[in-house]
Each structure stands twice: as C-alpha cells, then as structure tokens.
Image (tube, helix red, strand yellow):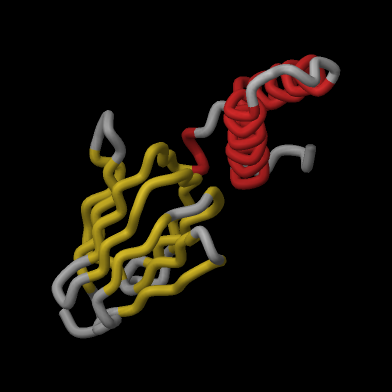
Length: 142
C-alpha cells in the first residue's frame, strides 16, 4: 500500500504494536520527530513522551513511551522502547501514586547532600515518565 509502512513498537516484555501505518510521531531525545513512508534511514534515541500513530484510514492511536531507540529503514520502523503503553491502558491512579512517591523520595534526597546523583537522576526520570503518562492518559497536569 503506497504511503504506508510497517511499524513495530517493542518493549522488553512484549510487542505493543505491529501494524501498517501512515505516519508516526515520536519523542526523540532532542525533540519530537515525525516519520512518513520513504523516510531516510536513521537511528535515534527515544526520549519520554507521546507517540502518535496515524493509521491508513485516518484514525490515530496514542502511546506513552520512554527510553530506548528508534530505527528507520527503507522498509520499516522499529521502536525498541524501555516502556510503552496505549493511552487507554494507562493506570492513571497508579501513575499519580508513583509520581507522588518519586517526588517525596526526591525531596528526602535533596535534604541529604551526600546522596548519590544516580538516585536523583533515576527519580527525576521517574517523575518525567509518570508526568508524561498522566498527561497522555488525560489526567491532571502535576
């Protein structure tokens, strides 16, 4: 089918998407990137945010993705994400609870100057991921 390409979104646990699409918009580490059929080959690092998949009939599906890489070849697009889930499958209550817990833990670390930066970095990443999930699921903007 002209103007379409196979898209796979895969996490370490499962294949999230495997279908023919018209376009995909992804959060790359340097900003948002859009991919259409015939895109030049590339390999890019994924950021945290919204992935919008445009189907051939015009419908759109939205996913929350975080981390990983995207590989674009002449034949297909493969997203190897650390996490990916459809917007309608996001547990909004769980995401809000995880965000709150990460913020509280970060506040505790901030009061201890001798704590490792790795812990802060991981907590900040968790906060970004959960804020993105909440936004994509249609929840409040925490």
